[in-house]
Image 1 (tube, rainbow, N blue to C red):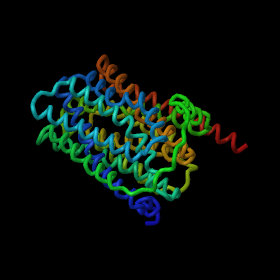
Image 2 (image 1 turned 90 degrees about the vertical axis):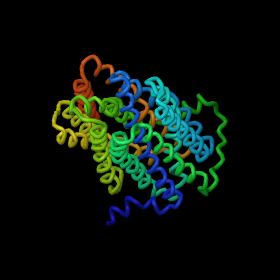
Image 3 (image 1 turned 180 degrees about the horizontal axis):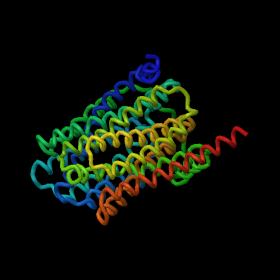
Image 4 (image 1 turned 90 degrees about the horizontal axis):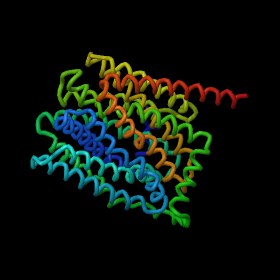
Length: 408
C-alpha cells in the first residue's frame, strides 16, 4: 500500500488531479481516433505504403516543429498555448467525422488531416510535458506526476484500441472521430478554469535560433541526457512504427477484423500499463539507466518474435512485451531528464525528448511501410526488432563500461 501511495502522491495537487482526469478521457479518445484512422486508410487503399505515409504525416511535424515549440514553451504562458492546441485538435476530429458521415472521405483527406494533427501535436506535446511542473508545486512529487502521465497515456493505449474495434465494427469510423471530438471539451474546460500561480517573467532576449542552440548544447553536452536521447530515438525509430502495420497482421495474418486490430494494439497497451505501474512504485533513480537498456532489448526481441508468430494468443503475449519495453525506455528517460534539467531550459530539452520519442517514429513508419510493400510486413518487423535488440545490447555494454569507470 505504501508503494501505491508513493506512486500516486501527485494527485494530492488539485490542479494536477483535475487535469489528469480530463486528459485521461481525451487520450482514450485520441487512441480511438488513431485506430479508426488506420483502419479507414486500410479499408480505402489496402496498401501498406499508404499506412506508412499516414503514420509519417501524423508524426513528422513533431521532428520539424517541436524545437520551436520548446522555445515558445519557455517564453509564453503554457496554459494559454494548451487551450489553443486542444481547440485546434477538436476541429480536426470534427472535420474527419463530417467527411466520413457525408461519404466524401478519400485517402488523401486522411493523409492531410493526419498531417494537420501532427502539426498541432508538435506544439502541444512539449508544452504539456513542461506544464506538469506548474501544476505540481512540490518538486518531490514530480517523479510521481511523470509516472502518472505515462500511466495515463498507456491506460488509454490499452482501452482506446479495444473500444475503437468495437465502435468501428458496430457504428463505423465516423463515430470514433465524433467521440474523440467530445473528449477534447473536458480538457479545454479544465484549462479554462485552472487557478495557478502566475508564471515567473521570462526575460529572454535571445533570438529563436540562438535559444534553440543553447538548449541543444545543454542536452548533448550533458553526460546523461545525450546518450538517453540516442537510445530512446533508436527504440522509437524501429519499434514504435509497428502500430502502422498492425492492420495488415489483423486482416491478412490472423484473418480478423477491426476487433482483432484493437486486441493487438490493446495488448501492447496492457504491457505498457504494467510496466508503468512497476516504474511508479520504484524509489530512487539509480536503476533507471539499466531499465532503459533492458527495455529496448525486450521491445526488440518481442517484436522480432511477434513477426514470425501465426498464433493469436502467443502474438498477444508478445505484444505485451513490446509495449512494456517501449514504455520502460520512454518513461524512465522522461523521469531522468526531468530530474536534471533546469526550469529555464525545460521546454527546449523536453522538445528534444519529444523529438526522440515521437519525432523519429514517422521515419520508421515510412521505412517499414516501404519495406513491407517490397518484402512483407513480417520481414519488415523482424528486421526492425533484431536491429533494435542489437543496438540496445550495445547501449547496455556502454552503460556498464561507464559505471565501472565511475567505480574506479
